[in-house]
Amino acid sequence: ELLMDQALEYMLLETFRALEIRDGRMKIQEESLEATKISQIDFRGFFSISATSGYNNNVEFLEHIVLLLQATIACAHLLGSKNKVKLLVHLINRIKYYNPTDPIQIQKKQKHYDTLLRYACQAKESDAFLESCPAFTTTTTTTTKRKKSSNLLQYLIAESSCDSLALPDKHGDLPIHLAIRSKKCWDFLKYLCTIPFVFQIKTKEEQLALHLAIGQYPANSKEIFNVWDHYPEAAITLDGKHRFFFFCASLSL
Image (tube, rainbow, N blue to C red):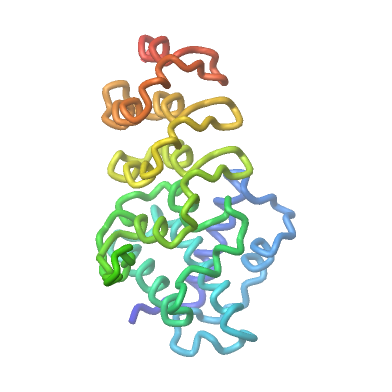
């Protein structure tokens, strides 16, 4: 079993906090529950076998696991290539062990813009979230309810609420918008397209997914082409932020 010492756990959470502050998702003096947990972490050695010692109940312990999983997802691009998937698998397995009936139910009581799925979409990492692993299993809708191996992204989508892909966050962004802003490859974006009309939903700045894509990817990229192909009407829809149409933007690229 993978072990992480207390100092590394502290560094991971502090790095996570710094990224949240840098990207404007957390204020330096914020007194939210999340900020308090990160700034006052008490070195409980989560990855040890006796990790639950010091916690009042399993719910409190699971909240700490989810926080660590958020931090690992957000900081995955800073972790070694050999360890990042192992860390993710270990955390998911811990959650399954202590809450086997509904592994990430605990995150559903969070605000919908603070879910694990959204952290994955806005993170700089991609490859680790797309690596297939037996630990990331999803239940099919068949009567047999057989489980199939998938990747972390599929797992987070399957375990989230059914409309999670179409729910905007407090900034008006859907998961597809966050993923495009963080320049995710098409192999990542395609999993966020199971609800086709997400390409028709605008951000608070009146931008469609296609408008965001042309500012993040090369003009001849498959990301732009595939986003355009999912909603061709976007090409004749005004970009509310930059006040131009898709074909005008294409000429300038």
